[in-house]
Image (cartoon, rainbow, N blue to C red; front, side, top):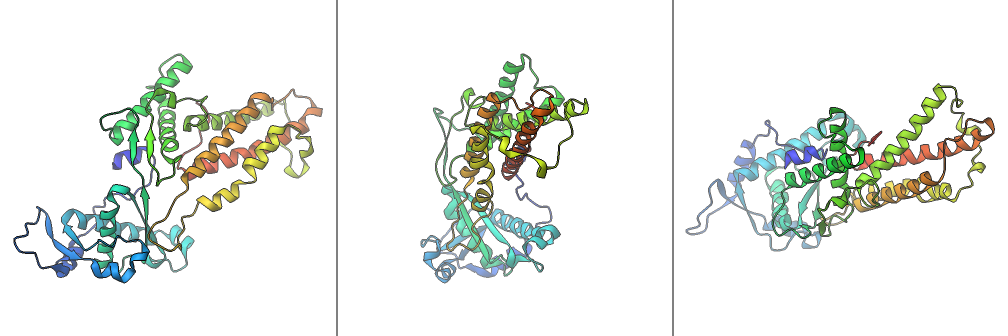
Length: 375
């Protein structure tokens, strides 16, 4: 799984060689409840720690399962807790994060989010409470983001995460070969582009559904298309079209066909008459700050154990933006003939598309995706 997350460009806490379990083990041994008569512990298990009082102390209304009673403490579980400790310590030592959170940032200003599948939620709640039980410095705020099950349409067997990535990567390479008429998969200049497109396809496919809902994966080649209106490939394709547009303007300017870009204050936006231009402005550029306000920050102070993430809002917004831009771009010739009386409208359009590009790049950054200059 760590390799798969690296392929997806997800910055996920990894196992640390410095993660020490001795202090946790000593504390766990002191908290162990006496073994029941003839209770056989599995290999690697130290015993059980009672969690019932912590559940009662936090209150059942908080969201912890009222059936939580005890936790089987194993060596593997202590390693996971040690990694959590290390992740929190690394966060506190990071000056940029610390200053952003508070001048005296420490574990009290840190919120830990446990991202867990619905099948593992019960066990993750045990881990959360055990951390509190064994570590006096455990963060005060721990929240759980529970994700729904992932199913594969029409597939009787199972599909591992690495197999899923390799399938999408092969489909991206195949689609590119059909488009360009040759296999570019081994071309060093294209290998990184194909990796980004594969990641974009997977992220949009998985994040376009609300995290708590069931996700049904469709593995057909039709999911990979620059002409589709739902895929990450479609969004990245339009991102590349914007890059090509501005590169074309730059080259033409260097050749003396167009003047340098004038100050924004001198532009006449009344020259924007096309309905598609105002659609981009009112549906995408102006509402984007509100979207950021609703999706960029998790509800840190919300009551209860569980939180939600609105990833589907970001994906749907970017897809709709790409659809609106694609329709406009296919219909309107942005870079017109190099005639002075046409420059005013051209620069007004370019400035609008500058804003569209900024929105698109920021939205992709929220998903951990870099913009592409060509596909």
